[in-house]
Length: 362
Image (cartoon, rainbow, N blue to C red):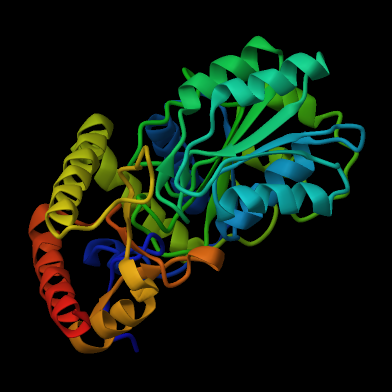
């Protein structure tokens, strides 16, 4: 069993009442009790995403929902655009390549955000509708993209915008319908405060019409099958029922507090953490940081050792960098079940440890 508390950018520390909800007795997924609960989950999630679109749920990680978006909205003749600012943006590219769609890549340096003008340049040259894939909150760098601006550019060119919102939903503002997001991807294990195991995509009408033309192979993620069950508040395959119990509890908690109040909570918490980080003499990696996590640079490439010491000696688990950033950054997740009081103690420990390390290395 773990002997630490999660301060990673997903999965997150899950509140006790939500964990308790996941331990309820199972119901049959073709029975009325389940369909009633499933309808409530979809309605609650629609209020948080600020959308009237269709929501499809999968017993899969967020990557599964990303693949579902790709395999359903794309056709073999499409050449999508993938806007990348980190490892999870690269995942869009890898999935598109896996379906042999020959995507066009737009890439910015880690820590930077996507510039809408770069997407606009390509859309002007192509002069025909296409699908643009990008990320709301890039978990590998902590960067936040201006999805509102990207949505306007993409819609003005008659194209389709698909956004990985897994880390940002519930922590960063992202009104799907108002920002012209055609497909929004999310999952249970981040700011929605539930265990991993359920992901979803929210699809607007124009994207759903395009999906009818798709000729890419799919079965488990085929939304033509899912739609027949969605209208009955069911899933075609056996769902992760206990995770759905937890997701419902997490959504209820957010709505009880209020969507705007929840976003404001994350904003103030992020501001507090970044003020503390600055006072420690550390520099943030992202130019435009998300409110879901804080990512800081660590000198002398020793973040891996710092993270291990925090875990082993203090029961605090942060996340290291990925790929080229491993050993160079610390990622602190603070989406969902965290507040200033909880983070104060953790940051106090980090500050003390950093002071000791600096003395040793002088």
